[in-house]
Structures are given as structure tokens and as C-alpha cells.
Image (cartoon, rainbow, N blue to C red; front, top):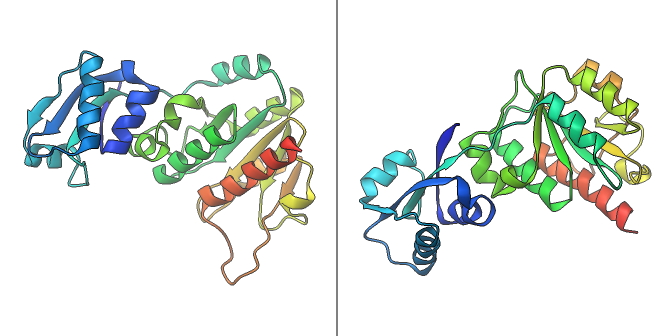
Length: 246
């Protein structure tokens, strides 16, 4: 069991909402009395957790100098699931699958943001690579605002093999690439689908791209060449949601 510290009212409230049983300890600033902090303390007390009253300097150390808003909690980290877990989950899926695949994404802020969007768009699982990529970290949990608890994250050692297996299950593999001939808005996304997005600044690896059934791009009408990874992921997933809701 991996333990980590989360800090800030928003991150603490997300833990209270989505994973209260994983909260182990709490510390609060004795000098702060704002309403949201008092509510978080009341919620912790209702769980049988009596926050330790401490000074700001100790909280600053816990939060490594970042803004903790007077509260820090120790929680059990959500664990990445295995390739075997992924296979069981896919075989048990009902409805039209929508999966997100992140190819060697290394920035925990991007992973956290992608998890938050995945939760909002009803993605049934996020697949990440084991090597040269970030896993679930405290930063991921904080940025995800609870989505690290609600969206299953599957860590695989051989992404090409996993994509081949998904295709055998009837799931289409759509890769995001600036070199694609068609935009996402010209593409049918209503079939069983895995959306594959490449690493920051690098895009999809060659072997990953070769496993894709088709590639799409986002129209870029300005001077910049690409969007932030998590922003692009949000556009792609919400286009799938839009098409499936019509």
C-alpha cells in the first residue's frame, strides 16, 4: 500500500467525496478559520478522523512549499491495474466501448487532466505504458480532482500487443496525428473505439501508429502547430460524446 499526502481544499474535498475510506490522517492549520476548511474538518470528524492541529510551517513542509490552504491529508494511493485486469474489464463491458490510450505520456499534470476529462466523458478505462511514462502520482491525483479514483487506469508493458488484442475484441483504434489526412470532425466515432494520443512533443511512436486503424487530426487555424496533449485529448473525447449523443 502506497501512502501519499494531498493538500488544498479542492483535493481534500475530492478525496472526501470519492475515496473517504482511503484517508488515513489529516493535519490542519490552527490559525485558519474559513468556512470551507471548517466543513472539511467536520467531514473528516464524521469519518472518525480527528485532524491534528499544527502550524503553517509543518504544513508547508508537507506540501513542499505549495499552497495547502491550511489542510493536508495522508491517503492511500490508487493503484494502476494490470493487463490481465484490462482484459477482464473489456470482456465485461456493456454498451459501446470508449477507451483512452496514452502512449508514453510523461507529464503527471497531463495524465491528471486526461483522467479528469475521461471521467467527464464516460471513458471506461485509460491505458498507459509502463516504461518511459508517468504512473499514478500525488500530482496526478491532485490534478485529476477525484478522477484517479473513478476511472480505471491500466498499465501495460507492450502497447502494440495490447492494441492488437483490443482490435481482436472488435474495438477500433483511432490515433491522433498531425500528419493525418482527415480531421476528427470528418470521422465516425460511434463505433467501439480506443482513442490513442502520443507523448508531449513527440506524438505517437511508429509501432503504435502502425497499430491504428485510422488517424485523425485537429484543424489548426492559427500559427501554433499543436495543442497541449490534455487539451487535444479533451477535444477528441468530447467529439465522440457529441456524435454518440445524436
